[in-house]
Image (cartoon, rainbow, N blue to C red; front, top):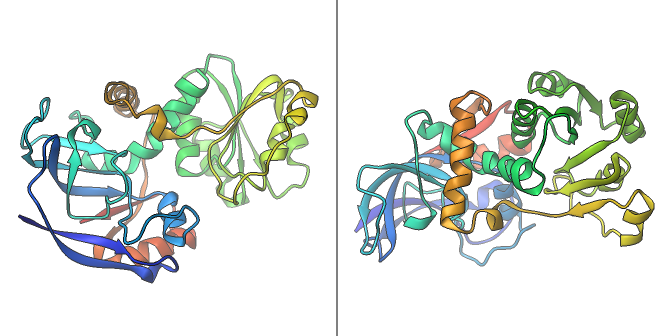
Length: 325
């Protein structure tokens, strides 16, 4: 058996409810691989789950994505070998750990051009951007897009990747200090969400409404997002940074231009192993070409996981947070 250092949650609440404990891992079962984590990703959904906004059965681990090395294989595993560098982002919560048994069909082999740190900080966010840009709506050259939270982790990836695809990208931010970050990510112009007339400000800046609005904010922005989409346009509500999005009467969509509204998520888009690996190959290509990038703003060890969550909630870190075992 292998000893794993695991972050465990027995109650929801402030960062200090997370405890680092030692657990004995059994050998990998049939279809599983034992992964020694080298880098662990952090996402805001981890905070939502820690707080109980997205309830989990207790006790529970946290964390959705990590990269590492295969140290052992259970029976009936093909396509992987001991020593392979791999990553995952859809094996359930529990990535905050030094070692973990993971279903092998949830793993993707990392190419040489993608480091463990890149994979751990970009897989979840990058795969989110991949399905938004290539599946939810297949972005075409000339598409006008509005990306909320354009200075955030997913927002920057969306802006850079969409620009590479030939789209014209406008962004929003919640503070003037983030404007330059969003512009550097490829946004043609950035709208300040503190302006109560921000939908009109976007239309004035773009000279037209958007083919697609990508809304990761939810409660505070969704109704305004509907006013930013052109007739027959698409509003994609894929996050809830400000809280759960309001219910929408379908008749509103009709009155605002026969709009389409969708609430997708990354996991159903990657539930099939072959589809997951094909989608990941698109992301890895974008990383290799420098289109998708990561700025790691801070590194925290598992011992300091409460500090990592605190820094994220206080917005004191510019860039991605990486957790090291």
